[in-house]
Each structure stands twice: as C-alpha cells, then as structure tokens.
Image (cartoon, rainbow over all chains, first blue to last red):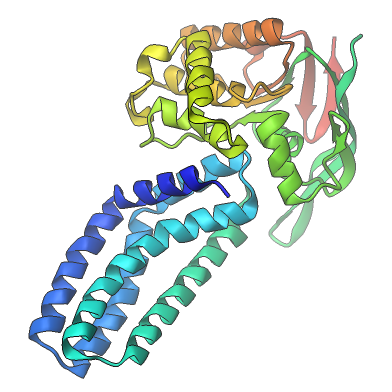
Length: 138
Length: 227
C-alpha cells in the first residue's frame, strides 16, 4: 500500500471546498446538539448529516474525478483507487462524527444512535462510490 | 526492422447505442517496433481513442488480442494491467489527466510514488525529467495556473518519468495553437530519438504526419497503413 499517496489524498480532501462546508456544518450541528438537545434535534441532524455528506462529495465531484482518473492513468490498482475514494470521503465523515461524540460524552446519548449514523453514512458512501465506478469508463 | 513491441491481432470493440451493438473497431491489425514513431489519424468518432485506450490497457477489446512487450493484455487482470502502466506503457489523455490543484512536481511524482521510489531518488528523477522537458522553472507551480502547452509538457513529463518503452498520446496537439503544437511534436521526436521509446500519437490533424516515421489511417473502425 502507498502510505504517501494516502497522505496526499487526505490532504487533498481537506483543501477542497466541500471540506470547508463540512467544517461549517459541524460547527452549526455542534451548537444545535449542545443547546437544543432533544431526540428530534438528534434525528434531524442525522438526516441532515447524510445530506451534507452528499453535498460535500458533489461539490468536490470534479476534484474527486480528477484525482481518481490521474491515479488510474499512472497505474494504481483498482482496489487502491477504491481506498483513495473512501479516504477522500471518510475523512469528512470522521469530522462530522465529532459533534456527536462530544454530545454523547456530555449528554450520554445512546451509542446505538452513533452506530446508526456511522453505518448509514458509510452505506451511502459505498453506494455513491459504486455508482461512480459502474459508470466509469477509464 | 527492430523487434516488435506491440502486436495487435484482429481487435474488435463494440459499444451499445440505443439498444444496438455498434462496432467501433473492426478487426484491427497492427505491429509496432521498438523505436517506432507512429501516427494514427482519422476523423472524430473513427475509434482512435478507443484503440489507444486498448493499447494502454484501459479498455479491453471484445475480440482479438493485444500483445505488449510479450504480455497479452487480453488475458491480464486489472491489477496486472495497472502494473504495466507503471512500468512499460505510459498514456497521455487528450485533456492531460492531471490534478489541477497539485503542483507540477506533485503530478510528475505520482507514478514514482506508486513504484515505491525513495524520496531522494524521486527528486533526482523528477528534476532531470523536468529539465529535459523544459519546464523545471515551473516545478512548484500549480497545474491550474499553466498554459495548455505547459500542461501538455507536464503530462509528457509524468509519462516519461517511469522511462516507459511505449508512449501513447491522445490528440496531443488538439488544444494547442500550431506554434505550441510544433514544440510538443519536436519534443516527442527528441524523446523517440534519445530513449528509443515507441511513440503512438493519435490525431485528426494531418500536420502531425510530418513528424512521424509511419502512419495509419483509421476510418470507420478500419485501420490501414499509409505509405
């Protein structure tokens, strides 16, 4: 595996516009979870988080395609392209999980809800990734 | 004639369009030799890019076989094809296939990272290549701030950095004015002469033909060598 490439991919992901949106979203959601703490807020935020992941990926679609295409041309293996994509997107998912972790620590939210968030978000990312690769020609 | 490096035997490629199966390549046969410099020309939609992608191992033919440096691409799996792209075959797409927000250095570095070359060695190779290509002064410039001609040079540097035996260029002059096109074609000629690299250029521009040793015409999926 190519550690230096993965570091570049993560760094690249954090310098894209979608990552800035994610940071803003995380700050807003943290505020709501801390000051308007209720189950409705939590569930709404989980739903919004899924939309946010999608928005974040879509806003960087061109960058993602450029990165994956360049890697493919220079001869990185297909499964490593998958790793690159997952790294690019999951770094945002990790950032998004921070408000939930903080809230869970402060308010002792159910860990099951956290698990739900992580699983659902990952399922979404995998689905999105599958669609991209199925449609990819190169 | 020197040894053959690419042998294309009866290659067919089909695409589906509106429920119909359309043949893009119809029984292509071609032999490329070490140190060859070939142009495949023809109008848009003739199948030139498809053929080039098949030679690069990016697309698989539906029928026939392609043998590159003794490797039959038709039977290799995706990982083996990827490995060939880091060692034997370099492909330059029409839109350069660069990462616009990476610097010139970072783009050229990618194949060497995949090959696991050490940092010090990478630096030496990249500097040498950039100097050869004539773009070393832009080493730390982001690709998005370069002109079309400079981007093409970066793409060539990235392709050349692994010292491939076959260099495939898809419409390298399509986005350039003729002055820049001439410089790029002269660069290909120099690479061919200095490294004995087999170069295949796909183009619809007849002016490219002046710079190559052999020419093939591709019309409606049928390839014919021209004298």
